[in-house]
Length: 192
Image (tube, rainbow, N blue to C red; front, side):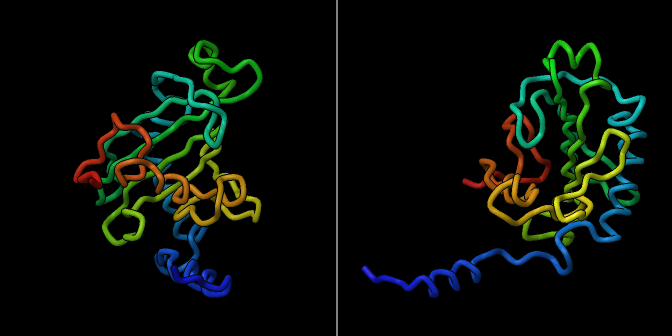
């Protein structure tokens, strides 16, 4: 069995990291503008905002989304593109429970996280998913480096260290970046 030096292993690890699309992974001016446009379409579909239709809350666990979640998956048109959307409303806070969220969603809503399949070529290394983390009012969360969380939110060994949506969701079974087996991404053939 051949042994490699730590330097060689480090170089191999660096060379094996998948390439990402040109530019910063998230928070670019274009990403922020697209997130605002996406929010407008989510409001029009009554998925977010004051007129958001209630969904079925369920226990989701605490991190990274929330103790109680609501989820919707559907096609959504944004301008000339129709892509697949997975939206989570994330609820947390003292006294949060499925029953309490159903009674008072506004009180416990912490964030809305979205993965939206953009046009082919947006991020081919990661199946063209666009990621965004909204405040309940539609403004964007910022990571510890003060970068707005919209775009290719990735890199790093854990959510706590990097806010890495792609890093985490790449581990979802089937290779479609979706953890819920009941959600089927249109046009996607699961990895065998």
